[in-house]
Image 1 (cartoon, rainbow, N blue to C red):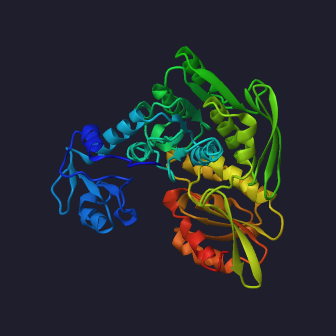
Image 2: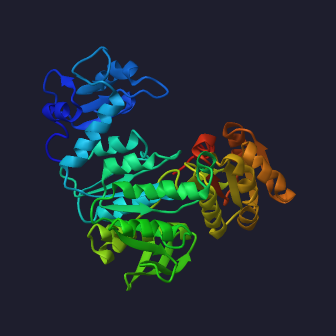
Image 3: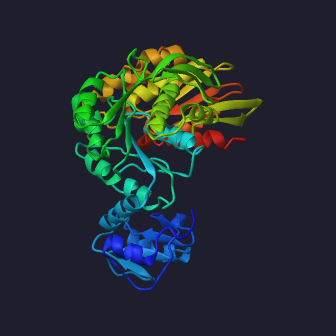
Length: 456
């Protein structure tokens, strides 16, 4: 990025707020602990009121703070409501830029597909993308507010927990390409049915720019109605998957313990896709990213070449060797999230590993409502077929644990904090350990216990 991210005049114009002085803003932050010199600190209200941390933000080098009440420190950008102010700043960031934008939603695979698309597009120009899973009512405007004015590409993520959340975010983003990775039972406890989940995901079309492209999962039973909705609005549809009519088609895949290679076709053009990570689900994510990248105008073979060096991040399949008595074990860190399709995919990766025992450490899958017990018990064939030893935590995973053959049972506890030392004690040299569960189950506690033994 050349020049400031925001000038004082731009801050006033974007938010309608008052600001004394002429601070130059080089970044935007919502956590006072992560503030860098030159940042605008946005005092949001969540579990804690961000206004309480404005002095700490200035102590860490903030150039200004976005506030809606009087606090200590200066300069202050005063607005009526800080979340509305951040949203307005995000809208201004979107309006001033010339970047080609893609927005991604889906029941599983959003963040990994976003990271793959960012990775591939970076070979063609400056690419801005959401960090972590910043995909909600504050995460999306924050990502847009942080977008450098000279970015060539932008990759956004849009999530939801309840009906009616995706459409306003999509209209704020106004992407040129949208991607729906998959439609499944994630958050079904809040939405009530797969039909309602599909309708909510399809609302990402509400923000798609004129002449835009929708990249949709061709193998999903909801493909046809969503494609019809997109085409009726004048959008181009690209289906991805194994379906014979998919424009981005997976012909075959070989997924080893360390990497995956696939034969694909894109609009009839044969290509070989390789990624440095195991798992058929990652190949499908890469196929969606490729379809989106080419819809943004980049060269397909060069994008495929760039994807060869992609590796999943922490909590999303990262492979972490760690020391144990007598040698080394391998952690498959899937601790960030867990929903039924993703859980099955991760167990399949565990089953493909070679070496010592394959250990599955599984936490509750949240937000499944009345469907939760059956969906947890339904994992039994996948667990039995891919794991040699199983540890579980949470009341829902108790149902799965009790259904396991006695020889597979390691331990069950109510919390991940209780489970972590039991797993750590059980792991031996050569073992491969998968850790996965919904974020609220705090499976990162198990990851931390294992890595503390000496990751390298």
